[in-house]
Length: 389
Ligand code: GCO
Ligand code: MN
Ligand code: MN
Image (cartoon, rainbow, N blue to C red; front, side):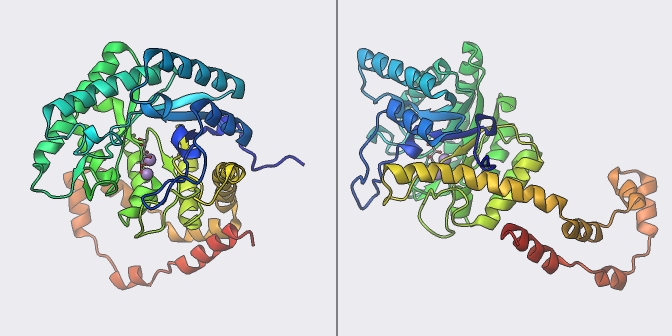
């Protein structure tokens, strides 16, 4: 019997080189898995099966101090491994956080030379991504923040960040890269406080950019959960604004350090509503798993980790369909969503007549308050569907 949860490239699942290539190093301990070169990571993804593509930071592919000869060799090996495993490059991004030069940020650094270097590094990384066919370019401001607000003027930091984005959008247009840019928010880690801590902050920045049409967001489950927020709501707002250009899927316990857990493993119910939203809204973009295997995992278990991310997504997708088709859910939804054509027509558009009609209306507050809202039944039925009962 065919496995109905087996992913195919059409599902548009992607992994970063840094995700399945993660060696298990953390602030307290050394790596637990041997490092893999990019071509080996692509082979691992080939072994996982059903993956659409791979994403990279410039320095996941090329060491920051690679010679030209070394870079050419790595790129050739990487290209061969992509071909061999029938994988595409979907997204590219810049590492603007690992090198000590960026210890106080990149685009928001207080040092004009660091800011200039950050632009140069990003332009080169954009070229590298374009060389491999990346369509999306992500900005995650890993070090764009502060430990003390004595260090940087937060208004100036926003201005610097905006200027950098304006410059890089113009560069992309000038070079014909065709990129769409996706801004990724995070509240903290590695900085104590990061600028643009949530997806909502970026959604507010975007309309102030010179090339706002090219720029959207890359929300990440873990990052909104770290901020104590409902991820599905952030994604819904991005979809509503036409700005969901990319998404980083993983999982994260609330109130903990940045965990990057396997998708759906910590909060399966939240993951269900997220998948339901993405599928029902017909999100066309990549589904990137920005997660990594537990530090205890070996290679075989890392493969299980990657398969688990995709399998859970597809299981939840099936549950979302069941939910929508379920007769009990349907009848509850009908009861809850009280349509009122006349009422909606009145409030749909302002006119003096509509305003006068509304002002003259009598509402029976007690009757409104007495209408049943069987959300307990609805949520319990949701649980039963999720549990396969
Ligand atoms: C993190 C971030 C990163 C970014 C990556 C791509 O918490 O470290 O999620 O993994 O997604 O740098 O921009
Ligand atoms: Mn993250
Ligand atoms: Mn991420």
